[in-house]
Image 1 (tube, helix red, strand yellow):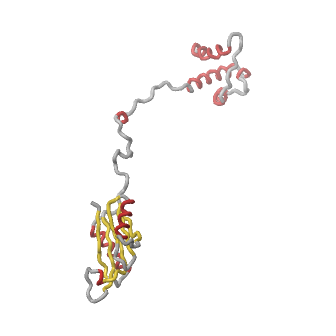
Image 2 (cartoon, rainbow, N blue to C red; image 1 turned 90 degrees about the vertical axis):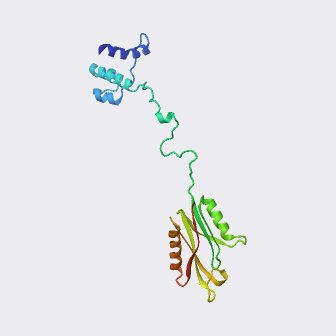
Image 3 (spheres, helix red, strand yellow; image 1 turned 45 degrees about the vertical axis):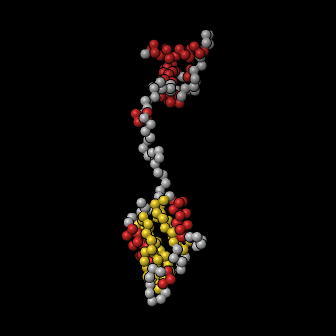
Length: 211
């Protein structure tokens, strides 16, 4: 122990140079408290306290040395270029596919319905279908992420006979619906139509599903 202690003091002696007394660096508060030092200069404290301070500072210096331990080896999957969990794979689709329905104001029967496209394309095509070549004003009726979408119309007869010919009926409202199956989408669109206009005859005019 004595030999190790003298080696720890050797750098301080060499730094001071021949014939000069090396002034030790300030002792840390932790060492001063541990050794019971009451005076600010180490040399002013009793010999036993000075010895304790030198030993404490030498130990602190060893703990503060940079670690020479080599860095851990890379993980096996990192060397093979495997991305960490949660990283999208190259070429994976990052844009969700949606559907859109645009409706013209009654009494126009015009509508646009598309399903299973990226959002911008779905809205553009649905609105274009509704406007047609004459530019009929249309509004967004529904954006949906379900597999299927449907349009229902509530109509009232113009005369005695009601057929599929637009001249035999008047559109009083258009409603929308969506669902995992065509039947679910139709059911939702018809329910909304019947709820909003009890005197109209409601029927589904279009249903579209994602491929």
